[in-house]
Length: 185
Ligand code: SF4
Image (cartoon, rainbow, N blue to C red; front, side, top):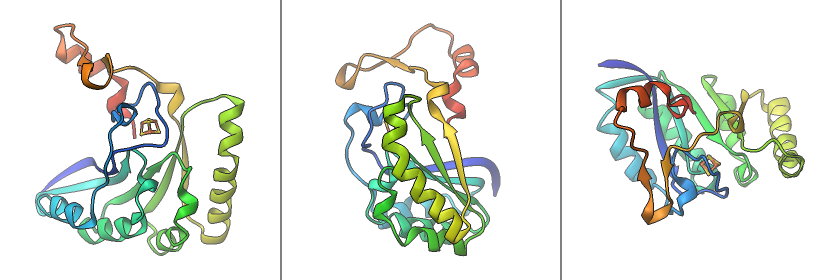
């Protein structure tokens, strides 16, 4: 078994936002969600080979998925020692009232709220999300971290949709070393 720092899975390929710098390409009109059965099959191909320190549930926007709480339970069953991290922009967390109790029972979990703009309009839209998360922290003692995604924006391709192309500079090693996207959640 090989220990690795991080492994992640897309629960949903679509997103309610369309950030210009999305390094998961969810701003390119991708659709579809992963079923619990598909996820279990994929994870089981790896769970006897890899031991991830952190296993992230993300997308796209994972809270689009109606079975989000069940994914946390599934991930815990498959990766018993991993820190489970739910990476979300937060806007649909209110659709999952069962989630905080599940996170409360599992101490090795956290919500990673990614913030995608620093403008006042975005902050205003985010206000109910922050209120909800504050109430979950207060009532369930869950862990919530805030990640300022907008501080690390970069564009990792040119064009869009079917005309998307990789950036070409002929220096793949240097590009990899400089690319901040590899550190994104
Ligand atoms: S919120 Fe995240 S997944 Fe959605 S478009 Fe923005 S960067 Fe991509």
